[in-house]
Picture 1 (cartoon, rainbow, N blue to C red):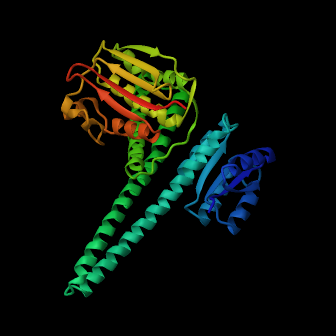
Picture 2: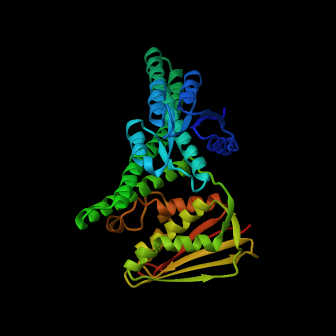
Picture 3: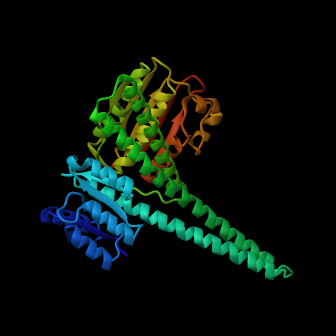
Amino acid sequence: MNEKILIVDDEPDILETLYNVLSEEDYEVTKALGGKKAVELFKSNSFDLVITDLKMPETDGIEVMKQIRAIDDRVEIIVLTGFASLETAVKALRDYNAYDYLNKPLGNIDEIVIAAQRALERRSLLQKNKELVQALKKANYDLENRVKMRTEELTIANKELREAREISELALRAKNDFLSCMGHEFFTPLNHIIGFCHLLDELGGLDETQDEYLKIILNSSQNIASLVQDILHFSSAYSGKMTKINSRVNVKTILDKSLAVIHEKALEKGISISVETGNIPETISADEYKLRQILYNLLSNAVKFTPKGGTLHLKSEPVDKDSMLKISIEDNGIGIKEEDIDRIFNPFEQADKYLTRRHGGAGLGLYLAKKMVELHGGRLWVESEGKGKGAMFSFVIPAE
């Protein structure tokens, strides 16, 4: 069944635009011209997501959220706000558990689609987690009763074994869903913290010490958000639910953007970066987000494990009669022992536990990069002559 979305605004043109965009995504969309109409519709219909403007005559967005929360405390809410009502948007996040807020006018209409997808994913995960917990409790209760009633029967032993295995599998699925759900739950407060940091930075007025503390909070929050994102990716990859959304991706642009992300850290360590681009295709069909994540994981690893004053070389070229695109990242860093070559692609693994403590990280980067490359029908591997002799990570994906 298609998810139901209620959009609320006092401007007919904005309502119509949002209605058309979200309807194209196969959502069942209902329009409400103003807050009063929205509350009336909500009382007689059930919705999975409400997208509401804040500043409206008569019944404003805050009142809309207050009334719908009294009816259904599980519905997801996204608020639309102009800069002047930013403080009201923060109140909506804090007091009415709104999932997100977007500034009007929208710079990119895809922002509302992405925000809606994420909000509905969170709602679905919470519901699935609740159902799984209930199912697990019921399964445990049934098992206890059967064991008690049929202890002396030989046949119950085999049945008990089968049920225990089923419960174990259910528990594993519940654990994966729990990890995913908790990851999304962590994102909400983290986004609040990061958002407030940016807001404080924009407002200014901080002295040098306060500004330094603010940067520490922002950097720590972003690191935690990155770790949570890795855990979410791991959960979907480990359960076989990782998917990709292909589009035409400009290869040179994505390489430049990926290098830009790690440029500052490389500069801090005095690492020299060189780039060699062969006769590569201008665009390929790939999941842009996952391709950027692959490159970021490999490039950041290279910077992390290359000493100060080291070198990093990025090379891209067509192979296999131009049917595949090959990208290689070579450094003169710490290298990898032969016995660790295969192990480093396992989850939560690094070649040396001492390096994990020294450089940080959960040991998921290479595992996720490998899974994302394989999701594209490609292959990721590493070559190294040994400890202290650098390493070269390479992957190939279809160049269609």
